[in-house]
Every structure is written in C-alpha cells, then in structure tokens.
View (cartoon, helix red, strand yellow):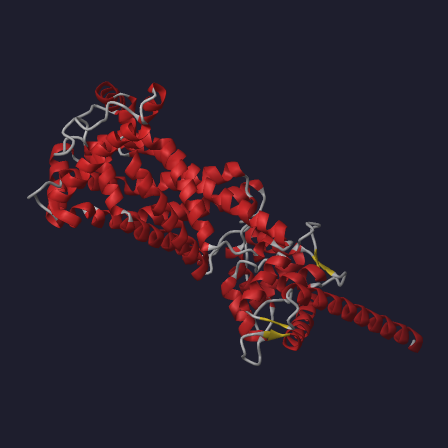
Length: 513
C-alpha cells in the first residue's frame, strides 16, 4: 500500500515537473516574441506588435491590451519588465490549470463540449448550441474536437483579470470575439462602437479634403453645365497629328477655363467658388463615413468568405469591397448630391446666396418633380460609382499592401513592423483617385447634367440616360463627355490624397486597423 502511494506521489511529482518545463518553455517563447527588440522590457506599442507576431486572438483588441499593461506593470512605469511578466505568467498559468482540471471531469487531460457546457451551467451561464460551438472552436485550434491544456492556456494566458474563474473566462471571450478579423464568431455589441470609428474616420477625411478643394469642384460643375460656345474646335492631340505647334493649340483649351474663372469671380468673388460647400460638408459626412465604413465591413465579410485574414484577401475582393462601399454611400446621399449640383447651377450674379438659395432650390425641385426630382440620374450614378470606388479603394489598398510587403522583404522584418509614411499615403491616394476618376468621367458628366437639368446654367432638359447621351454627342461630340476633366483631376488628386491621409491617421489615432 505504501509502495503504491509512493509510486502515485512520484508520478504526480513527475507530472508537476513536466508542466513546469512546459511552462518555462512557453514563457520563454512568449517573451521572445513580445520583447523582439531584446530590450528587457516592452511598452504598449511593442506589446501590440508582439501580439501580431504571435497571431494571438487579442492582436486587434487594443483596448484589452491596455488592461493587460495595467495589470502586469506593477511598477507603474508604462513598461512590462521580464520579472513582472514572469510573475503574471506563472500566477495566471497556475489558476488556468486549476480551472482546467476542475472542468476536465473525466481527468483525461482534455475538455470536450459536454464538459464545457456542464461547467458553464454550474457557473450560472446558460449558452445556446451555436454560442457554445463558437466558444469551443475559439480555443480548439487544431479542430480535433477537444481542448488540450496547451490550447486552453494559449488562448487565456493574457486574460487581464486578477480573479480567474469560468465566469470571467467567458466574459473575456465575449470581449475578444468582436476584434477577430476572421469573423468566425458572432460579433458582440461592442463591435458597433469600433465600427463607428471607421465611419467617423471616413467622415473627418471627407470634410477636410472636400473643403480644401471646393473651388475645383465648383469650376468642374460650371464647365459641365455650360454646353455652348466654349468648346475648342481643335484638340492638342489633333495638333500633333496635323503638325501644328502643340503649345499654340493647347492654349485654346485655356479659354473655357479663363472664361469660367472670370464668370465665377463676377458672381461673388471668392465666396462664389465655395457655393454649395456647406451642402458638400453636410453631404460628405454620411457619404465618406458610409463609404469607408462599408468598405471595411465588406473586406471583413469577404475575408470570412475566403477563409483568410482581412489583410490577405484577394485583389478581386478588394475591388469588390471598394465598389460595395461606393454604392452604399451613393444610395444614402444622392438627394443631397443632386441638391448641391442644382444650387451651384442656380448661383448667379446678384442672386440669392447661402441658405436662401438652398431653400428656394428645394421648393422648386419639390414643386416641379416631387421626390423623383431628387433622384434624377441615380442609375447613372450607381453605374459610375461602383467602378470608380472599386478602382479607387481597390488600387489604394493593393498599392499600400505591395509597399508594405516590399519594404518588409527588403528590411527582413515582419509586415506588422512596417509603418507607411504619410508621403507614400499621399502618392498612393493621388494615383488611385486620378485613375478612378478618369476611367468613369463620361458617366459622371451625364449624371451631373441629369441632376442639373432645368437650372439657370443648364436649362437643357432630358427624358433619361439615353437622351442626355444622344444630345451631348450631337451638340458637342465625344469631347463633350470630358468637359471639366482638367479641374476634376486637379480636384481629385489633392482631394483623395488628403482624404486618405486623414483617414489613415484617424484610424491609427483610434486604434483601428
């Protein structure tokens, strides 16, 4: 009997030593990934990058990382020293083993779904089958139908709670599922707050960029609306073919621009170049917010469909996500878009200004056409916005990812350690925006004319998309489809660049990726 007891004690001691060796090995591996710069301590930024290197479920949960730092950093100096981390790790590991051992009723060293459900129920937590499946799969990394202690510990080791029990473990799970980029689990309510961050970042970006480039937009709309008397007869391309001096012929193109600038100045000086900008700001808040927020949501949806991380979705999915973002924004703000164009085309010298002009325009639109008047050209708008947004956002994301991968390969480091400079963000944004704008410009000309028809600057009326296309080609030829392209490109390049610059920095400030 004593011999059997001695053998049992010896087996327990050996198991304890084995767990200690495993614990030491895991501790060394974790610390090596967190303290990748070998400084002997890590700050919050290094902690975030370390979690990405580990591909830990918390790698996007920046709000929980702050909690971890507060718990582990017992000295309060804003950094986690190795000894602090070791004490936290060993204490947490012992508690996790205690809970694991209690849940593992049959003592086979593994937890199955039946044992987990029973333990949750005893803790006063009643979960349905789907939620239990999601909770279980989040820890069952090798998908063998059971949770080993290694899987249990790796998922929960950074749980920022001083009192570990099954209830706090489940609460911890609920707080991390909302930041899982793979989207394998049901999102908790908190994701809505983080989602609003993307909408807010996009809205701020839109307001800043559109206000800065409002004069270019005003000039573009003016040129699109004017259909007679200012189109040059000879284009510089024709000059090259005929052998005439390009500079001489190109100067003729400046005529419409000079005339437009003079007319706009006469209408009200500097203020005239910002006609409709108030509406532009009101419009761009929901437009940019919905565009960028829908783009991020679409990327996550497509990443889940492909079964990959958001950062690794295919180029096709990036283009598709960009189109979805643009279409959602277009549907939401189209009435404001139409109102803005008509206000700009009703602005004349000595006429109404500001809110009075907006009120008059709304009343006139309502009396003449009712609700449909606010949606003129919508099919044309959707037709144009999908390819533009797809090319614009898709090209931007592709170029940014390409830059990060190239630099990471060159510097022989992880992609998560590469920061994209603002100058590069500007260059990428300018390229993606100008390519997208030029590609769909004819569609935008036709849409704008449908929206502005019957106004002071564009009295022409149309019966639909085919009619506006036919009349434009009959009166101005193919070149009429590109009226205002020069100021539009001059507007788009800085507008998109500023927009993306502000957006990327806003995301960083709010801890979004």
